[in-house]
Length: 182
Image (tube, rainbow, N blue to C red):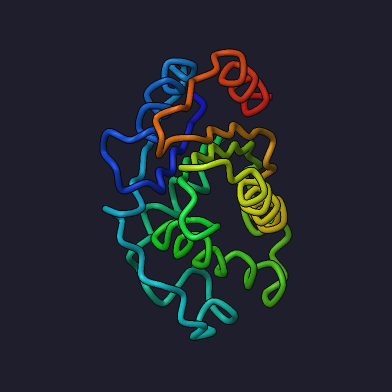
């Protein structure tokens, strides 16, 4: 059975990210779904301790199960609001903690750093029209995910959430899921 890993970077239990997650899940009814809320996960930041340059893993073990689920996933869907032009701090901390894989690849020679290839998709929601920020967030993932044997294949952007002027576009949602699953 294929596996979908959902990474929710929003603190809102009934926010737009949560709504889109609920819309995406039925498309993956044939998959095992693991979902992580980065605010509940409360990841410690990377402190550049260099442990991962010499050892597999991280000196901090708070994300060990998350990393196991990431490594075994076939699909990764990341849902994030825009906070100060970028990812919220807990999601950014998770991204920073991927350093263990960069060190595996570039310091210890693991090629690939993660054996199982995976497809990823990013859903970005913003209070205003912040398409430039969504593009920057997307480009950041396009740069860092390939080291994790992950290809960012899909993006769905939803602006206007502060004014409640946003709409859910079923065509864009279908496109997002189709691109993620290929």
